[in-house]
Length: 348
Image (cartoon, rainbow, N blue to C red; front, side, top):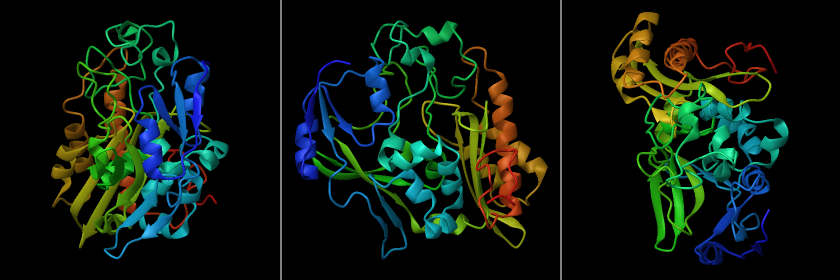
């Protein structure tokens, strides 16, 4: 690990000024960044510690019915907030299916959204990776790539976004609040992460010095609470990133799906909103056949990036499974194995 300056600003304005310098990076819990630094993958010359910034660790119910979550709220605190879990059950389920309990106790909401890909070639500094060194190439293209992207990838990068939390948030039209050198702005979470294209090193829409200060869920998102689930297929249920995941949220009235919100994880460099599948479901009667049709629509543009054609079929199946479970209704208690297809809703 190279030497670096350490700065602890007193407020957001000081933080932005300090992080606008070339080579600077924000530090919260560091559950991802410190690992990258130890491995030589990330080499910031300055760390700007935001953990003491006032007002960023609050969960606020706003007058318009929306929910504002400060960027420094811990993942575990948010998932175990009873009012939050009742209103946004798929998001709570996604949070509890991610990482280990110890990491959830430390990791922050803002950091979760900005975590880097878990592509093994990105983590291996001896491998060619366009994210680490633009123009170097992508060793994953001809390497071990069964877990890589099937949507939105390019020849320059086939990595996937690792967040569970972000998948149902994208489905529910969450918004991020950003403070930067040009003041405050808002951005749909779906637009935060960029697809790789010819510039895979540019992973987000953030500019130098930009700091995510909060995440906001609109009031309308609560309308899906009765029929919302998050399902995640992973190589080991105890603790692993998603091979494929799906968030399904339905508004069912008088036996008809009036509105659907769907998103996929583990398939692209960003959480993937399945708009085409939502259109298939709108106005239809809940049925396995229509769920399969919607799943095919969601993956219509998918193509293997290597030895991962199975992920296209798997994503269709897991989306149909999530829709079936959502139709049955959100359970009163989160399952003992949150997000797992093998879980039982009778768990604590």
